[in-house]
Image: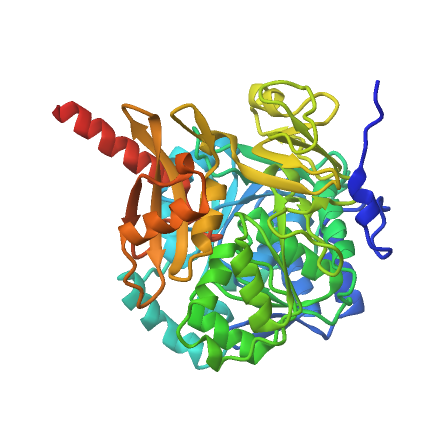
Length: 567
């Protein structure tokens, strides 16, 4: 038997050990610790309102006590359906303090999606925005929900914004929701006034007890609840802290655009900030101009994000008016980072932008380039401390040779316990000895740097050739007149599938399909060149900014089926 090789370890800077000592403590302990060390320091900034670590901890305790008074017991699931706002942080840590399991719920869910998630998780209580209260109330009779706790953006706005906001909300949503306190509907403001703040101690085993049920996107079939323990989340946060070794406890300001209901924002922004005693600048939604203004005024040093976020900022017509020089480090995740975007963003900010990689099932980060060490453009970097990775040949457990494309598999203390109530699906991706099949196709070079070529399910087979969308997208992103590009395989009666490009032009561009076709033929093999082009004003995206390739594929499939039925 050959010894497992870890060639990436030789690249680790002295400040990053290949193995760490991890805390065996509940995740919420870090909020208590930061409140003790950084009590008077600002923890959150939100649209002019600030909370200290002391205030954040006290309010999380108030919520925990209130939840326990409503009957919450250890292991009960509590849904949090909020954008980035003070309540989302308070709710997260309050639920954990009370012994509950957080179920992060996308505020954009429709009633059908919400009902499925509540029933699948067996959620007992939900904490939601006032504008989302009708959805929760409508599905309550058909779910396990017992209590709804309602809050509003205005609850944490300074005067006079808190008086003006309801009018803005009414205009924006065409509805003014005014829930009232009752036996099963609870107002956040009432909770803060009436809660005793006395939390009954709950014994937590970090290695065994779940902190989070994080639902996957559900691009294939129904979403699955990923079971993440306190320990999973603690170790991934401690890995993040060590990777960012130049960042100082209690001194950083973190831009919180990535939604906390997504595992990437939850770990890389919220949990990391609380662990380090950093200040978070919360933004409930991404508007490029608002972000540029906030960066200039609030001077964030850390800016975790996604490629589409950086792209939108770089292409804003007033970019040069704003000072972005406070930014020191950014780790990009959720989608491939085009090299051109990386280089331009570093030029504009003077900070470092590197690509990382992870999945919901891995808490989420497994790989990254070094922020201040050797990095390789186009690569997702190397495995993090205590994290192993291999490339398996297609549909086998046989390891691939260096440079050979196969499925990336990973193993480490951040890997999930499994899928909630889905042992068969768990067994398909998680081996008994802990190796997790990511479903991503890639390869490792001789130096131990990993590369993603695409999701296994997104690979296009056209005329017998394997085409990886990312390769084609990288070429398109290098074109000076393209803002965003996504490649999909569409049905083709002759080739089986053919390559289609969806393009968002940069403002003022008048590039044509013929010009793009000529450019592609000069820069890639003929079989990879898109046969179809479609220009759009925008592309469908998730809340974290990931382009929804699957949505475009489904649209094309439907068009094809309709055209076939007409014939």
